[in-house]
Amino acid sequence: MRFRIYRYNPETDKEPYMKDYQLDNVSSDMMLLDALLLLKEKDPGLGFRRSCREGVCGSDGMNINGTNGLACITRLSDLKEPVELRPMPRLPVIRDLIVDMEQFYKQYRDVKPYLDVKDPLPEVELKQTPEERDQLDGLYECIMCGCCTTACPSFWWNPDKFLGPAALLQAARFLGDSRDQATDERLQALDDPFKLFRCHTIMNCVQVCPKGLNPTKAIGDIKKMMVKKSL
Amino acid sequence: MSSPGLQGLRPWIIQRVSAVFIGVFLLYIFVVLITHSPLNVNDWAEWVSAPYNNILIGLFLIAVLWHAWIGIRDIILDYVPNVVGRLLVLTLLGCTLMGSGIWGFKALFMVFIK
Image 1 (cartoon, rainbow over the protein chains, first blue to last red):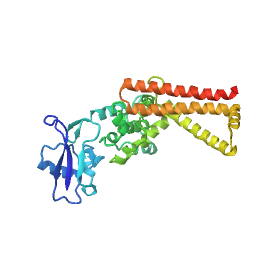
Image 2 (spheres, rainbow over the protein chains, first blue to last red):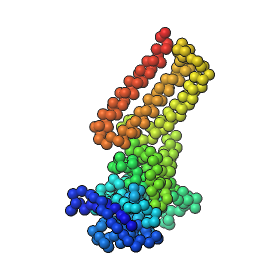
Image 3 (cartoon, rainbow over the protein chains, first blue to last red):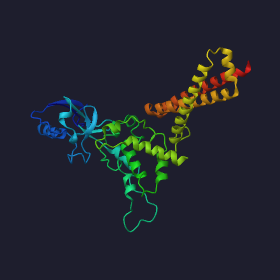
Image 4 (tube, each protein chain N blue to C red):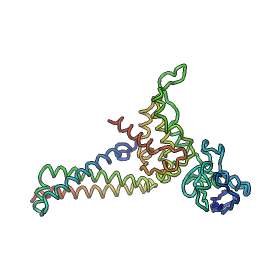
C-alpha cells in the first residue's frame, strides 16, 4: 500500500515536503495507526502522536486524504491510495504530523470548562435527576482530539478569536448542566462578534467528529439560550 | 461586549427578523404585480404614494440595508484579518449602504412631489 506523508523537521528542513512510502503485507483489518507504526519501524524519524490506539485518548488526530480523523480507528481498507497524511490544518507544526495544540487548549480554557457553583457546596456530591443527566448526552463525550476545530473554516480565518466547535461544545456542556450556576455569565461572555457568532453552520465539525458528536447543534442551542435570555 | 455595531447576538437576531420581513414583503410585491398587471408608471406611482405602501417600502429599504450591513460585515470579519483594513472596508461599506439608503428614500419621497 502506498502512502504520502507530510514531513517537516524545523531543525533540518527549510520547507515541508511530502515523502512517499510503500508498505507490503497490509491486511484488511489493519488500522491506519498500525500502518504508521510499521512505517516508523522503517523510518524512525517519522513523528506522530498516539497513545490508547482505540479512539479514546484523541492523540492521533490528523488529516487523512483531506479529511480530519483519528488514525487508530480509520480502516486502511476504507482509504484510497496513495494515502495522503498531513498534520491537522491551521495549527503550527512542531514536527511531521505533530501539531502545537496550545491555541486549541487556550480556547478550551476560555469557556471555563468546569462547574461554577455559587451556593455553598454540599457535604455530598451535587446530585442530578436522570433527566438532568440526559441533557449532557452528546456533549460530554468529546475527547478533545481537535479534528472538528481544525476542520472548521471559521477557525482557519480567525483562529485566535473564534472559539471553535470543540470549545463551544464544552461551553454548551456546562450551560446545559443543571448543577452549574453561571449561565448568565457564560452567555454574556459569548455575546461577541467572534467567539460564537463566526459559526456559519458549515458543519465540517459534524462530518469529521470521530465520536459522532454534533457541535453545530450545540452552537445552535447556545444561540437559542441567548435569544431566550434576551427576551 | 464590543463596540456598537460589532456585537454578537443583536445583529444575528436582526439579520433573521429582517430576512423574514424582506421575504414577506417580496411576496406581497409579487402578488401586487400579478393582481394589478399591466402596471404603467402612473399606476405604479399612485400605488407607491399610498401611505400604507410608502411606509412598507421604507421599512423594506431599512430591512435590506440592515440585512446587507450585517451579512457583508460577517464576510469582512471572516476574510479581512487586518484591523486597519477591516475598518477601512467596513467604513466603505457603511458609506455605500448609507448612500444607497439616501437615494432610495429620495426616490420614495419624490412620488409625493408630482
